[in-house]
Image (cartoon, rainbow, N blue to C red; front, side):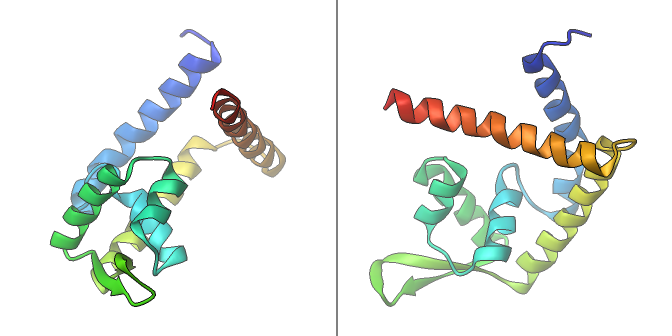
Length: 144
């Protein structure tokens, strides 16, 4: 197997995605939606713009995911009394249950992925991934 960082990251991501994708169907979610309900579980109520900014995706994509989540009964949207132009998004009981189930699947995959890693190695690995992400963010800021 090729051992470039790019290929190693791709393969790890691909393996994770393949493991988690069947869980989406089991829970009733679509690709991209778990991250939204996870964020909402910790930051609700919030606005669509907040989700788009946090995940660095366009508002239109967030809007489509929220439409589907709302149709599925996972979220509700209420007009923000402080700003009539935006909605506040909250999880329903079904959304909270889906998020808990997703979180359990994520814990399982982390256990599989990090098997044999010491606590120190796990912490360092997390730090390395965060630093790599920050490098991309810094580069993007430099380019704008």
